[in-house]
Length: 68
Image (cartoon, rainbow, N blue to C red; front, side, top):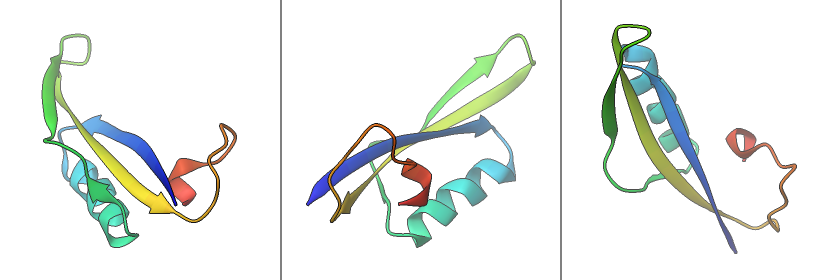
């Protein structure tokens, strides 16, 4: 088994929650707590959530993590 990692980031909108929820529905697990930071250039709060997933395949840098 290979553990893969990705970080979802988005403006603090419902779209962020939908992206995380979609990943969870596809077998990804939350890794740590979400992070929030103010983006002064856009004038909005930004969210980030790390997620992990165990897969049968061997990791390689070319794999599209969101499609696992």
